[in-house]
Length: 319
Picture (cartoon, one colour):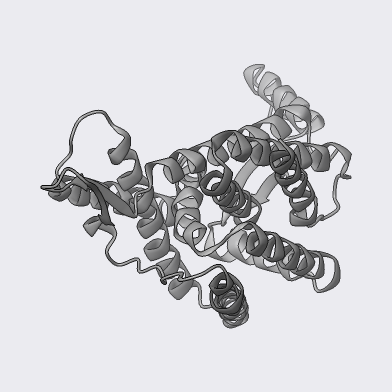
């Protein structure tokens, strides 16, 4: 087992919570607003609070394959290349600033969704101002003020905000293709090139931030050593300073956001129950990975999560 049960359950709990928040954000549909016109017809318009997000028009089903999917793949390739270049250049200040902008934007999107769900009517002006202030404040604390609780709590809001932008661009078949491609890349990046490990180390050591869930912990022997040292100090004995390596339990952001996107696409296609099967499949797959993986070894999570997602999609389709 890669981590002890307590840490494993914390990671699984945060993963599942983010998936459910993601479905809630998808249900809220923050990109659009509905109002009743003079004829009594419900009309859907773009949410002015998120007017900076322009989704391409999908005229027919083939557009998902011929236009949108290639654009998404190219965008991912360029993003990975850009991150790789910045990592090589060690442009820490620029990356932190970039993280700050992106984190602010996606938390803002999630907050707009939350405000749509509350039972009282909120003015557009209030929604924009409130969400902007809170999003920028949380992003600042996350990026520039290191705090493990703030880091993980903001992660819960980051990935739903990212997912809701991509969900309208995908259908069942294109998300399946994308999952397979991402899984292949993940295997290459972890097992062949080691790019994922290098990027994670750079983020943690150089940037002092990490794109994903992050739980430091001490093992049983380390906790025993600290307890013994405290007892000796209480007795007045001198205790030598000793460096102790902290264990890290991490779950990358991609491993969290792609299941939300997948469940969101299924939600919009087949409904909530089907989406919950997809979420359940991903959660079980991740739990099995943590359970049977070996400590000290690196594993690409997406191939395993994708297996769970595809199983969930199959179950949803059959029912």
